[in-house]
View 1 (cartoon, rainbow, N blue to C red):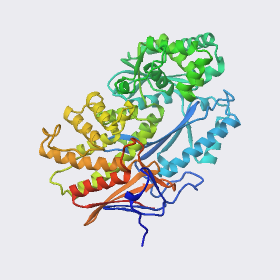
View 2 (view 1 turned 30 degrees about the vertical axis):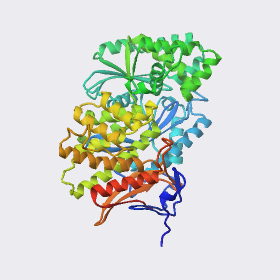
View 3 (view 1 turned 120 degrees about the vertical axis):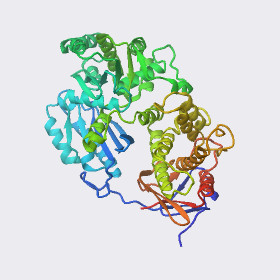
View 4 (view 1 turned 90 degrees about the vertical axis):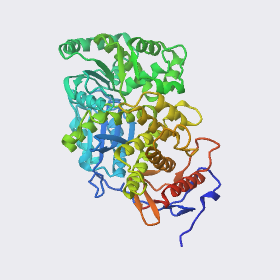
Length: 583
């Protein structure tokens, strides 16, 4: 007979469980076993259980390498990031014209790390695309490096032209901002080059790549800012960029999409260019993620005038980007001046997401529309901007669990109400947004998430009633269970009340279960038997499973919370809930 251990007797609110032991808690059983690893494969190969909806892009930038794995849904014509990894490589660190042995070593090790993650997610081989930009474009030993990477890691590298890189950046921006119908100038400052692209309705009108990047400018001029500015102006003038833009269709909006530009926007918002650096967490969700020429100049002036104390401050604020941020900021200021730009909007998506969009267009053909599902993209935009990487991963896990439970329960069709696709959209939106309130730094983040969603005017094309429904799901994801005879539910129709309470039970259970950071929830299965429901979750690695919350000191243990959610589930659905972590 299997050994059983009662959660309610466990001494710690954040507890660890060895992989070999199942756990029994009243009506909830969690069994844990080891999952076989696929990490011993020397090369990337198609896995027999590979998911047809997983796609991967690798962006080998001059400064850093970025891995993105997404789950794509052709029916909703959208994708959800499920894994991101960024590693500082600086391909041109030792030489601006070739890939040195040291840079090659760093690059190959980074690609190996990426391969491990790709294998752990079972991404189909034909749905992985790796692209390289300026550093490899101009490298004298480009061919040798590409062949070495293929032989060592099994990853085929596609070295993009500057114009193709610009096109893909534009596609990435379209996945994040609702600018499809507008003529937009996208600017992406990389380590080795800056891409300019004008597009409208998904069609590129002009694409230009200039060999101006924050890494190569830093290497060429160091702190020689006068010479750096003169060089930037000379390159822009010789390219006739201003004339070519004037000859092209007039752009209505300017969008910046690189890490450098996002860092500058954050510096503007945080008051880096002011006498004192400030950041109001409560006001964070009200920012509009754009900045003007005057605000940019304030940041540039502060960066260029900092002494030794300022260098420490800069490193603390910009982190790894501090080494190159002065060159990036000066370059952007010169671009504003040369092109007469007064304001820039900022996109969180860029080349990596553009590569994904391009891959989806080829894989799904007419089923993938660049302008489709603006509603859902507004949800992802808000989640991406207010959640850090860690919280976004939790949100993805939460949505995966919730969707599987929802779909499984819908098959039962035994609740006197029909659950439809819009209901699933509301539930998934609430899962992705459930923890955005943490940005306020206030106690009771679930209440803050509610206020941000309801009052922030962030969700595009949703009615006021739909926004309220999503916001309430985040409000009641934890703590007190909702009472439908009280405000704000009094005005709900009985059908809406029934749907809400079903989805509330689902999100509460999903939020609790997603707290483990060692779970790979790419495969979630919900099964029904005569007496119970079974939720099957996959485990990513062989580390001890940790399910716990350090959110508030007064939180009840997760064991007690899970027991309570199991009771809510049983009371509503008249069946036990069994959660299993199998091999």
